[in-house]
Length: 96
Image (cartoon, rainbow, N blue to C red; front, side, top):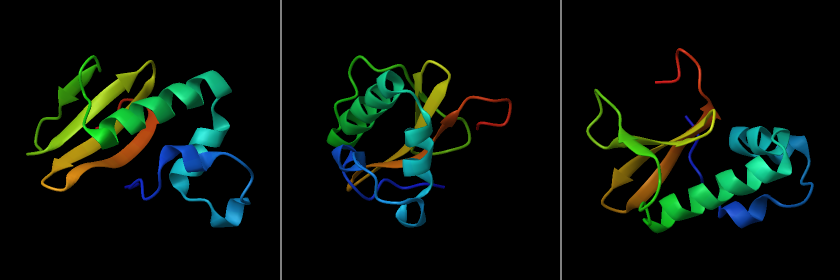
């Protein structure tokens, strides 16, 4: 499980692999266009602006949703305190 503990704009620059979390590593492996699209989606999710996103409630969870961006899925929980990013990964047969 990966929680976004920083703002997506903070992912620019080289901070060294030792200090990066799983999300940072995943994003840096993507091409720039895809990385920018994912960062924009994450910003919208955090701000609560979900209109226009390909969003779906996940079965078996009370407050968990996914946003689809091509082959990449951004999974988040809606809480009383806002939306928390739980995972960003490629879609596969075991994604959910």
